[in-house]
Amino acid sequence: MIDSKYISLKTTIGLVTILWFIMSCGVQKEQTPFTGVLEYKITPRDSSNTALAAKNSMFVYTNDTITRTENFTGQLGKQVSIRHMEMDKSYLLLITDLGKFAIQTDHAKSDSTKRESQYNFKKKSLKKTIAGQKANKISVSHPNFKEPIEFLYLKEYANKYIAIYPEIPGLLVKYSIATEDGILDYELVKINEYSPNRDLFGIPSDFEKISFDEFLDKMIAAKKEAQKPPQ
Image (tube, rainbow, N blue to C red; front, side, top):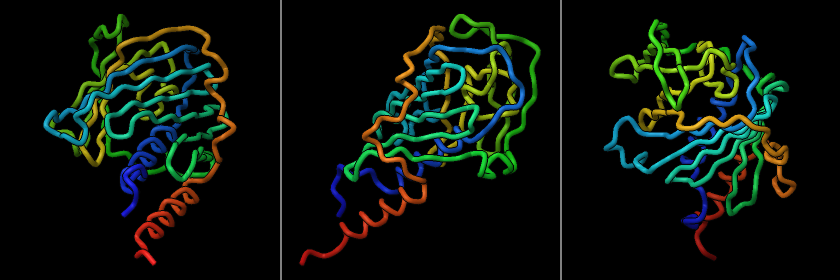
């Protein structure tokens, strides 16, 4: 058996896939620049889902060129991703017993943005206040949603900081994501405009830069080694 300290292969692949998808989607329309931090709470729509029941949160720091996204979950603790919006590249920082890794993705060379979306969007005329901000509404449908879910966005800011749905014409402040474990609801609880420390957006020197495939190879090799019978 693999030591319990190791991140499980299934959980790691799921985490990497979700964050890679979030970081891979682009945006076409440039809007008002934003520098500072966005704080979101993450809540499972199905409260009975024990796999997602822990209190989760997300912080997005940005200098309008790079974003640093910090996710805090009950299952995996803190996960960090750094995305250069202009260069269209990202790094997912992971700490495991195998070492510290910065899993890199060059989105300009991938075809992830070309896949067909299963989401349908319908704008709504009324507005709603969230975290002290007047937000626009949009109704979103998906095969995994029992019924359309109301998303909120700030049209004065670009959506590139939360680049999940390129169809949304603004910064998402309330939205949902369909995952294999269930639907997660994200809601902005605080917005703070300031100039973040530039060190937040660098890759620590003790992290090994590695591709997604190379990282999986290391995980699979470690699993096979751990499953070998004792000599």
